[in-house]
Image (cartoon, rainbow, N blue to C red; front, top):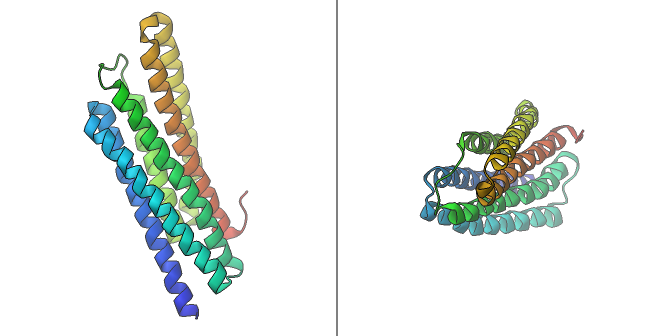
Length: 213
């Protein structure tokens, strides 16, 4: 009975790892679409979100089976309950990547007025947070989870920098208003992706210690 339970937990880790890889690929593609103003790449990210949604359902069903059939206790129960919370955050990360991609398609007709380097840096930092938070859960790595929690401040600081730069640009050029709003929305979605990665890391800490801080 325990062997079957452990096999199912291993399957849970495998599926969450796969879902994390899907998100990492989506964020990488989204970043490339943003730089190149590439509609086809942006559409790939939007389609990918449907796959992420299906993966969330599959993992949720596995968690429900584990809870109903195996009656886990203590640490095992924390793993399963945390997994259910984590996949919700992961699904929302996929949603935000798709939201940004929708904006990329809309913005593709015009050159970007400002330099978007800080937004691309936000993609990289938030994407690494997602990747490492998922890895921390699968490997039950407490130190990595705590490191991810610290990195959210970097994403927040970049969002504030982008926000102030866009406001300044808008003051100088009112015609820039529509694009400023779109870029601001993209930056906000990226800040939320960082927040969701932070949530995942917090659930990792709970899984290992029983304390969510």
